[in-house]
Length: 228
Image: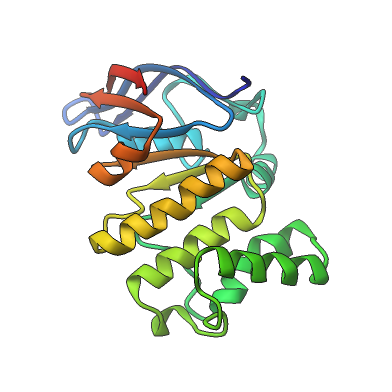
């Protein structure tokens, strides 16, 4: 197996000396291609911070993040933006859909930035809508979709560009149990069929049950790392 994600001695603090909070304290992990990994731990343990550092959405105080063999600290701002666009899909708790765009347009947006042809974009959008069971709803804007439907659009958008890595921050937190399970099954199928690598930060037992690896964080440190 290929190491897709490597972190080495990641440290991240917030605040000044008097109010300094250590979010991550020398965190080193390797995640292989095709893994379905959940980063878990109590609130304040550093889960979301770790996910943001892996995705290049934040910078560590020290340590390194290597994705697909590339150290993201060596990239310029534009290079990092392009790398995220082409290699990482993000799924956020708050969906983060563009409100003035339809479901189809939200899914298509990253592919548009990638310069993918109109015919290929249309094909992938149709395929993704079917995969997340939203056929016939592609012309609706987010305000005309339920929370579960919006999160399905967010999942489709993250996967449409065929990224190496999908980072999901509490993706089921705002969903009812039935919708959350349905969405997780979609992601698990994609993981198994297409070998997409998923990394979740979560409190959700449903994700933990389906994950093939659990990384436990406590007080910014890796407490346990278990493969099932």
